[in-house]
Amino acid sequence: MPFLKTLQHQQQLKIEYDGKDFARSNRILCVMIASPRRMTEINSQQAFFNVMLRDFGVKDVRVQEVVSLDPDMLGFLHRPVYGLIFLFKWREADVDKQEPSCPEGIWFANQTVNNACASVALLNIVNNIPDLELGDPLEQFKRFTADFTPALRSDAIGNFEFLKTIHNSFARKMDMLNADLQLKNDASSRKKSKAKSSDEEDAGFHFIAFVPVQGKVWKLDGLERQPQSLGSIKDDDWVIQVAPEIESRMAQYEEGQIEFAIMGLVKEPLTDLMAALAENVKSIISLSQRLSQVKSDWKDFLSEHTDGKCASTHDIIIGPCEQYQLHQESINQAELSPGLEAQLKSDNVEELLGARQELVTAQAGLRASIRDEAKAVRVDNERAASRRNDEGLLAKGLLQVLERIGRIESLFEYDGET
Image (cartoon, rainbow, N blue to C red; front, top):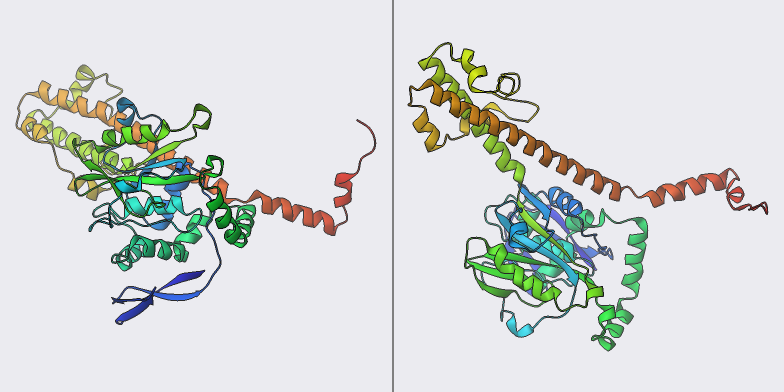
């Protein structure tokens, strides 16, 4: 298999790819050389997907687990929801429902590389999010493949070493050996799959994506030739519209076969929480300044109009804060709500103190939410790091050391006692 080696090229390029010429300037130079590396399976843990996106260079997104398709439970997903990822035991859908060709404005890639469905599903979502910061490697890849067919995009993904390296970073040594073995058995496997195409026992688990694009909801399944439209978005919350489609797919399986996972790709909650904290701090500062104008000794009334301790300046943030990574620039750029702007014109001290206390109480909740989200990020990083720490290699190294010092036989000695 060839792979793409990415280089910056400062002159007009003409790239021969699958019999077609593509002119590009200041884009990725694709040098085709031999590489048999495969992609390994990825567990459906949101931590792995979050770290993959971070390593890809994608900014301001988070993968959250969907525990239920109940409308109330879907409401817990942070908004906006950019896409859903559905893991299930794959069955071929009705090909007649697919588009005759990939509609203009939709970035969709097929999956022709084994075990690439996790990365394909992610790319099929992030490449359809307007104005999303993808990072230089993915941004260049998206531009380079803009005119490709879904099949050509699939080949490009399989040849994209940057992506494959990150994808395979969650694989243990044994996973890579199994992937290499699968590469050798591909020819015979394809023959067997044709003979057993109707055998449900041989069906593999697969990730697909659901995304809202250009006013419609789309199912983007890399194992299907083209995208499938699920209809125009009827309400602002398109996720509710997708739920029956996923539930219908789940209902096709017997009770003992129910093994599914659903994840939502959403805007990073910390982004909105930090923006809300900056606005909150600026609002408290503005009210404090107004109180000083109306009544210079207003701080003497804090214990009367609050619970005192909660409103202490030692317990609230009233400026830049390193602990929460809140900078003065963010505070300056925050916009005050129209309601607060109106309150700042008041001369009523009690009203101003009441408004300030409401903000102090709200800040406590914001700070707790920020700590929770920051902890969730740390947990994801720890889980991903643990997965990437191949303990099998450590065990192999220890056995090699014991062999060199002549102690490995003692591990298997049996003295006859029970």
